[in-house]
Length: 355
Image (cartoon, rainbow, N blue to C red; front, side):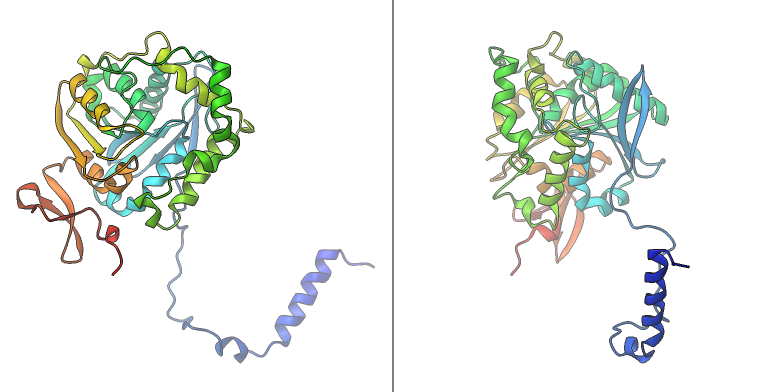
């Protein structure tokens, strides 16, 4: 009788193992197997993606952190999927220590979310609220990065009594009543042609040459992964329609949010050298929001300022904004604002250049 091919391989493997002297392994081992403590679970490699049905439409989201933690709605930048949240997890230990539960809902046409060209800002806010209600979340904070700011303004104005705080990090002001008038003369076809190089080559979308975030191991690779998810994972094959739709959304009816309704304390974070969303945009947020607690401009920082100072953003979201994250005596610490000197090194000690 002829054995199946895999059975033959297994038999050969067993013979090889049996023929190997027992001390051959101990001669090369660099650990004592009797002292190794193995885990009974799995190590974290990323937030789990969930989905629910909202009025016949699949809505995808992540929910990462303790159910007892402070819920935070994370809204990533222009053309990003829910995986953009992973780009902040280099501070995961800090986030968990601060008790923050992060929730991110994928936007129309990106990642696994199907594209409906008729959906706008109000629809996305409705999807976020549906997810929050599904999770049993009442009050929540909002943090928005770059292009996510356009959506954050609508969400914060939609149900203001539920918003604990609003954090805009180099965030687009394109839906604020104080915004600069958008260019609505560009056709959908022209916009798609303009953006095709980004969606066909995701590296072009998420490449950040010269940014301080490149010192974070794996950050750039993770960013490329988000762009690939955004433009390919659901069979989009680099179709630029979703990205073009998002670019033109500020020209749609009802694009301007009623920011007078936003009563939550707001925190703004900008880089003085940001050429994508310059400091003038922060001033538009200041003029539009009734309750800006703090507006910080970090000297010399560009459009990735939110990552460079993400630890401070987390501290503010957690409600300890009267403290500053800084490096002192080789340790990353939360220090009362009154005790922070002008020469303090802000943020995690890991940002310091190697000597």
